[in-house]
Figure 1 (cartoon, helix red, strand yellow):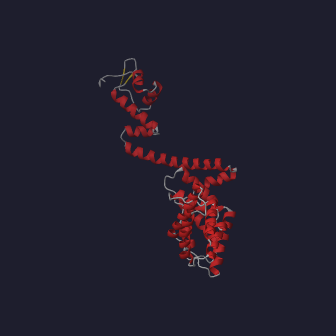
Figure 2 (tube, one colour; figure 1 turned 45 degrees about the horizontal axis):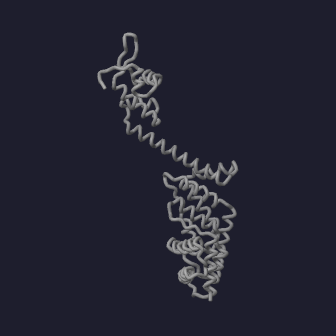
Figure 3 (cartoon, rainbow, N blue to C red; figure 1 turned 90 degrees about the vertical axis):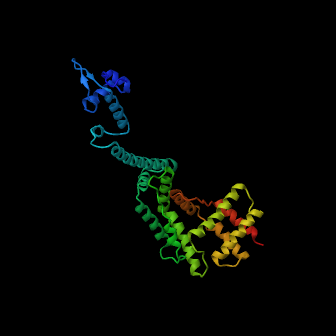
Length: 315
């Protein structure tokens, strides 16, 4: 390309792919002024105009306003500063779009009313502080004035939903579901009843397991294995199932400070038959999705299988 050549506005349009109307607009705006004019007043542009037009088109496609483009070309700001500003705006817009997508997906999945949709949108936009306050209020209500194992409630409430700065749609959907779960009156009543039973046993002098993350992981490992066995069709009276039962009972003997006996195994079976609420398992599963932890879903089928395996072990 001849750097000394001058081009008509039509030639410039062919070289850049922009329309004559667009180039004329940029020219009139002073963004890409003509290099010269013919005696008849026709505009002429040099090779620099081509470079400027390509830069202008790129910046405009990236969302820059005409005034911002002019400031870059006039060296009143840098490309780096302009890009940083637009990146921040774009990331905020993406966060808002992700939030809206999560709410809309939840609406499609759950078929909610207009008022419930408003609430879901509000829940999705909560700050970290507001999310933590909702979880704290939940545990305050379900454990107030009860004789709980020392550290139990503190450990339960310490697991907070920490959405990352750039959460996935799945994480946002999990938070909406978790927030709705802890606000559900029936779920609060059910967890309160479990807490009351726990308190009653302590009041009666029964030993109760220490609640902490390490202990939870051990019991989750048991229910994870049970779920896999159920899915594989393993009979609860099989040698494989009985090997799992022996490991589980050995843990329970230490946790509850009780001797191994037919009575104790029967109580454990009753526990798995009656005291498991899948919603509580879902509570932890949602927290795991939000925080990027391993998930340990506990199903009714797996707890029934464990109860049957325990009963099969009683001689």
